Length: 200
Image (cartoon, rainbow, N blue to C red; front, side):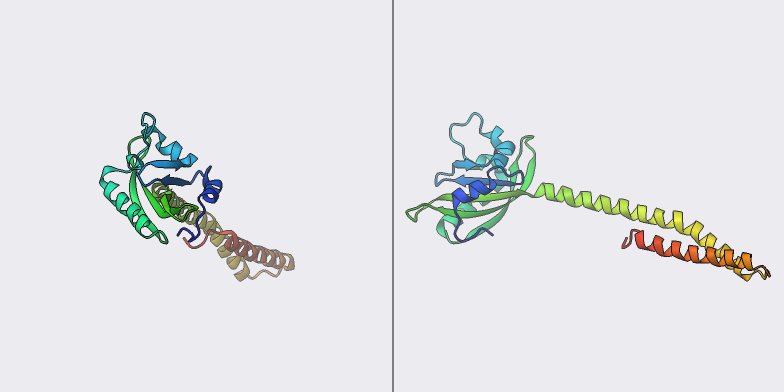
């Protein structure tokens, strides 16, 4: 949520060069008075041949009424912030989902002189979720492979050591070797368990 005492110049200094957030200032006529670098990179193609930069050009036609209604809420309730998810049109004319937080901008005289919006592309976040899901699947298969590839020969080794312990040989050196093998196998199991990828 946007802070109660929002300073537009402070916001511009903070987010003008952001690569994540879009920041816009929309005047009472619905025109863009300001757009930060990120908004410009994504949407400026829509405004290249336009003398008047109508804010609604970047919004998908189906969501324009919702956008206008949200901006009007800000003007009628300037002390409140309003959130809205809008479909926007990007450079490829495909639609991206952007989550916006809007609030009225108050000038030095205390009058509402437009609306400030901060937006975040939610499509990128969904792609990140998909990427994380795919990485989780890969880690799961690595953990299974890791477990089977190492545990099987380790279990065979432990089984052979147990068989050697059962053999009755009256040779002190043989017993020491078997005990040392048993100790080393137990250490190897503990080390293996400590570095194994777990929770998959």
